[in-house]
Length: 233
Image (cartoon, rainbow, N blue to C red; front, side, top):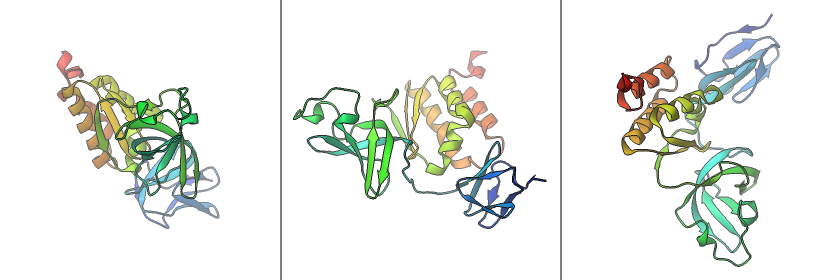
């Protein structure tokens, strides 16, 4: 008989048994030892149906194919832009991976300039190389807005299950928000709304391990934001 020994967002240490039995499946930060699923790092438990994960409390960004990231243009060549995405290796965006037709030899700064922030998707990671694409909906150059750095391990909590947390913040603050897997968040809205959204995201980043966080964030926004329920009464 399978037995779950932890709750969502419990803090666990390496070697701690999270569950017994074959009904549960190990994932990030865990491994199977016989019938047990065991943590292999210090972090917070994350339970998604039968899948058990441990999210490290503090972690550097490790790029993976499929990750949506926010990067800053730092260099360019005749056929590519190079972006800083917050890890040891810079990422490359080829002209072939944009949504625009770009003629050979054209000055690439006409499209994306030094210092521009771009939301893109990682398509390939090899030793020393990270390849990006913008050939999907929503991938684009980001306009004027506010940028926030968060711990990459807190990204899942900021997004929430099925996007619930970030959707709530967007709706209540009327802000456009993009969360990169690399720990960079871009938001855009009215100045007062931007401040509320930024404070809410910072609160999640600092208190991701605490119970009742969703309710506290919702209450905070309702009190602070002109779009919140308290202000509409």
